[in-house]
Length: 147
Image (cartoon, rainbow, N blue to C red; front, side):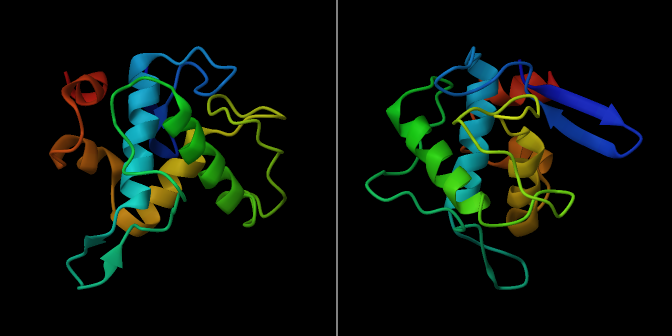
């Protein structure tokens, strides 16, 4: 289940299980990831007049459904995001581990959701605020964090 993780570094999002072809694909974990992908792939006007988001383009795919179920569309979005992200340095400036299509705990073959959260927040603002206020975020995702 997706949940808030509080530490001395701030508040982050934790996915309890992996999301991907080899993951447990819990509904709130998948939905949280799908909502983050939706934000990253959709352009919205920012208060400064800039176009936020839109950093992720997934050829051949429509707008990602935030339904909490892992399927071909979610797999395509994960693959497109990881292909885009692998071109940039990891959090410590070093290379990211080779992705296998799964998000979850940071492992030699998986990526932490924190990377995606940081990318969303760089272009769209606070992720949790978006979960709370964006009408495209379904209740089952919002409930993981606020109810």
